[in-house]
Length: 275
Image 1: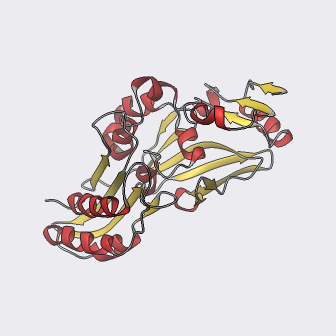
Image 2 (image 1 turned 120 degrees about the vertical axis):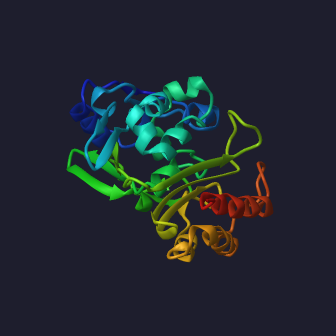
Image 3 (image 1 turned 60 degrees about the horizontal axis):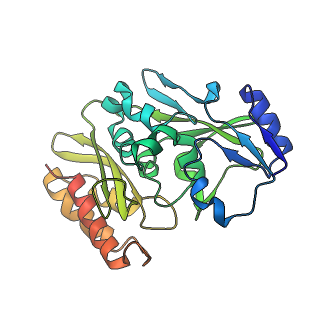
């Protein structure tokens, strides 16, 4: 390694990123350190850990902004996130051990873009937008457009993730989160999902379903969303299960089989609509 910068502010961070697009961007380090022995030594490190302009939660009437440097301990401990964005708060509690939650950050999970990243289905279901910045300016992109392939994203070489902006669901919206792993704690996901379901009485008006570990990236379950629209809540579970059966093509790997993942995903989405 030949370079290291721990910037004093975001402007310095962006200037460093523009000048050294090949450097490793480091925040909590919980993802990067796992594979450190299997990758080349980085040419440099841009260390964003606890950079103040990236560590915040801003609550507005219609949305909540969460800085990319905010830790999962901070996310799950924030009372408004827990109350109004419960899938994200619940996902934060499932990200590794307490030590990982204290170091891991929202921006790191999003930037790493692993198909088993626990927060990512929640961000999909909640309709999050990402704020990205470079020396050229800032832009927003729907999180649903951010992941472009296996661990690939729409982040430009000179950009950094600044924040996630998440609309607050209307009162009465049904929110859900579920993770399935080999054990109840500190488990890498076999399947996980989140749901934001808009209801009119006992009828589903619309639904956003985010799933992880069933494809090469976190995905929206579009077929399920279409199948449940207009259904009574008591009937939507069966419709969701049937739509899920034919709409995903999970893989066999060291953690699970495609058959198991498909069956679990069917049950998971059906339970989101349980009365």
